[in-house]
Amino acid sequence: MSENIEGGVELVALVRREVERALKALRETPAASRPELLTQADAAALLGVSVSTIRNWLRDRKLTKYGSGKVVRVSRAELLALKASSAEPDAKAPAADADAWAAARMRRGG
Image (cartoon, rainbow, N blue to C red; front, side, top):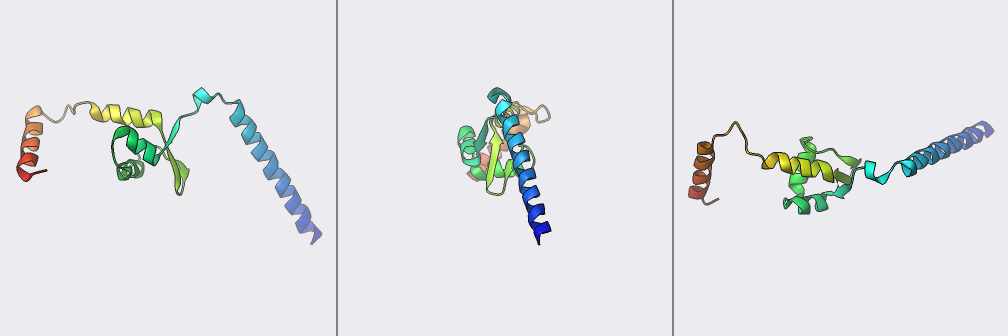
């Protein structure tokens, strides 16, 4: 029984040392080099899209997921880069195709 207790004490000490080491490294990392992370709701609001869109981009790996479970964050820089890349015109789609698509959408009422 005392072997289990001693092993547990050693494990606790090891975990404590590793956590302290990680926190020290984090404190020593300049804030400017760490990504600014946004909640999914804040990311959606920033781009004017739905939270579902942000989740889809995370699922499709268009954005990197920081965190796990319900606590997921998105890099502001990645989000803005994705917005910039999607704002660029698609060289593969000629303007006539885009006009035809828009006209079809208007006829359908959407």
